[in-house]
Image (cartoon, rainbow, N blue to C red):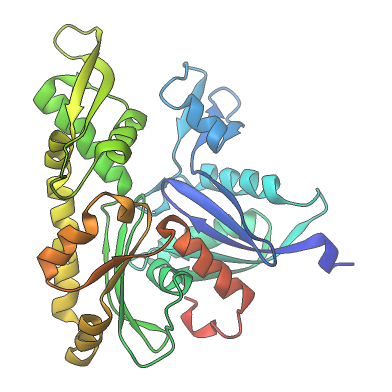
Length: 335
């Protein structure tokens, strides 16, 4: 009877999106990591997709908050409310409790940040909380055998961080955690159009530009997109046409940081594991891996094979779910 009223849950607590996996059911939720708060009562009005619809469109009584920044909790109380709210959406009924929870965290996280994640999960109702590093979860999620004495290199470009790791024998040999991700790319696009075109655009518009015409390499046919924003000179809304060339220029510096971090990780990799990476190639996961031509850009920079995993957006939560399903087998990968 107890088991009928309890669930085991795995969470990919991301800066941009939170994904929830339930043991025996698979991925049951994928929603933006955003909360709309009533400024008077400090109670949650909406969260997830409903809160995203309100983002940058609220009045003084409502505030939208992204409680995670750079892959870690920036607003402890709001993060706790968000986790509780999202878990309510997937609970079978009000009696259901969370028996065990596995949460993935960036590999460069500090002990204080780990404690914040653990406490938030426990306050959301989890009886037992385990943490797993994001690149390890990504490697498991895309089907790599992490237990063998062979080096696998994973580059996970998430919403808040880029996680780079060389994995062997169920452990992370080399890791680089770079606080550059999808959100930083969106911000780079906003700043570029503000600086070069005197056009002020919102974060949602910047993300749409990135997804629709963003690229890391020259395209055979360059794309264009009509964008609405506020003209900084006249102060009135304007419609402008932007090209993929402009967007590529805006993203250049951040993409350069990512490729430099990959090179840095390769320089620190032991020779035998480096030989394995040369043979097997580098696997890319996360939403950032879906940027047009990013694998080709990295391939030219590091002169190694680079592959984008299937369904890169859900690789981390699938790996975290696999750890949840087989906790005893993956005991060594838990932090």
